[in-house]
Length: 547
Image 1 (cartoon, rainbow, N blue to C red):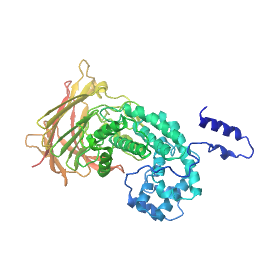
Image 2 (image 1 turned 90 degrees about the vertical axis):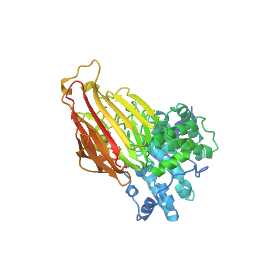
Image 3 (image 1 turned 180 degrees about the vertical axis):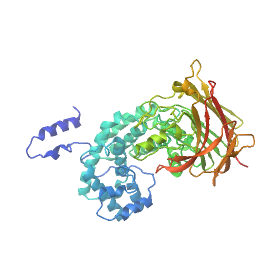
Image 4 (image 1 turned 120 degrees about the horizontal axis):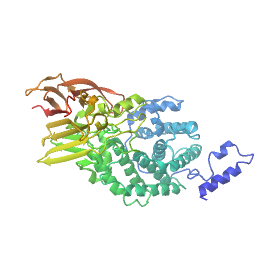
């Protein structure tokens, strides 16, 4: 029988003694790391704190209820304790005492009885890393009356995380859990068993890391989080003088190159499958710590096609939704694209909502919230309420050609084939100077399928969501027919959207979730038409810089 189970059994037997109360079962005598009072070392923490937020926390008047620390932090995020870094950035005895007070209060309120919302694997993992990473600031000089319950609570949480880690499916959550267990096992005296468990789970994970480097969730923000955690794992093991898995360095390099491929000209990230813009400076720091191989982005990564010319950057989602098990936050945005010019984002997707309102979460996942074609206001993939994707497009066919700096990318998906018997085929062209982006969207009949009656006359819309910083004018007639819409920003200069042929372009309201807060007002350019015949429909358009 394992030592931990033996100790547990012995304690249960001992609980029959009348001198033992119900609390005797709460903390097994030999729980890993529970008896520690100091750390063997403090793992490196290169990530910057927010001094302004730290000062706001410090300005709160005593006595503090635990909920007060959550001011300005959405939902249960305060319980991850990332704000400890903010108080450390302020520095001084007052900030140190505030950390001790809040940690002690949390342990009294939540550290003995696990609560599902606050003891999820991801929540525990972040809490452990922040408690350990900032321990030398607030914990090392604290009295023993603080340290005893502190280390018991950490041991209790680490035990829960160790039990959950082998069953975690999502890549970001799995890597985050391993980062926490490695930090705990390497830094806490007597906790080496947690380190061994984590290394045993990490080694096969990084050995099987895909060559393209992209996580299965295909979420740029998740990619950033995973890379940061892999960098931390590497630093923790080196600082603890522990041998790193041979494949870890290669996994870091591959993950970094895939992340670099999903950046816009402003240094932030594209908005696909749950991603947000993120702080460009922080992305720079993460890539710099990843190593020199992360500097140059690949031209594509597991279905994301990237093209650049001049200061123009085109990012194209030319793959299906993430596979089952990795699709909790996936979007129905097949063949959506984003386009930026220098530091200015022009065409975007609406992004992912990170608050508590399920209606907004689902709204950001809809096909209509992406810069792509929508038939009859139907999603190209079935969005399951609460998370996940049901019926989805099959394999997306992609073709790419390059010539003298110009790029052609074409993709086809069958997300509308079952209901309407049409395929969506999109072709994009980006000129070598980045000042001319052209597109063609076609609905073509599925070979051998009868076109259902409901498909004829069905409306389709091609949406081009504009970043909130973009100002757009009213449509005007184009020189060669069709319509044109001027738009642009102070960073991008003037641009023009041109609708060719018989389809007219209009400007409609939109929303933007890409900055991670409340929904922002934005605009979108829309091309609308109908499927008139069994041959389908076609629309051509262009986005050009005005000289």
